[in-house]
Length: 132
Image 1 (cartoon, rainbow, N blue to C red):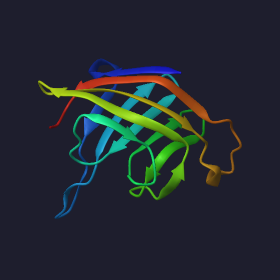
Image 2 (image 1 turned 60 degrees about the horizontal axis):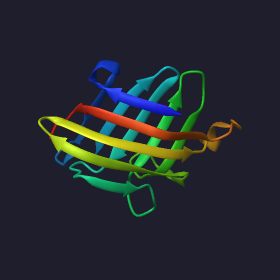
Image 3 (image 1 turned 90 degrees about the vertical axis):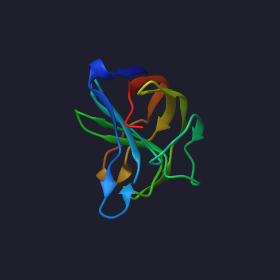
Image 4 (image 1 turned 30 degrees about the vertical axis):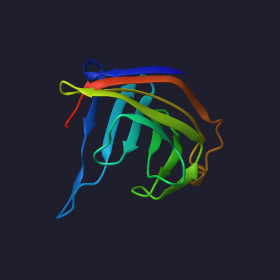
């Protein structure tokens, strides 16, 4: 599947905070015709490629409006263990915008009792206003 998020397509970047801790992560979120895709990164990310592995809390989640949640990477924030694979590449952070690409193989969250094939994102892109 291919996706492109820009400010005009219900996309955005946020820095959620915790009391007395400041920002806890960078959340890049976009809507597509069947749900929401969320990318989770550290609070102050720079340019470069980030592999979704057990050495980071980076993750991609896909929530379908017709049912099913799919995850790639590890998210200590949500407690979802390492699964799937993929990468997020931050290409540019300039002029109040962040631009990047992402791809993943995301299996369904098996704790929900659903048996569905994994979702594949092969050419995800975003260019969104950045809070940095």
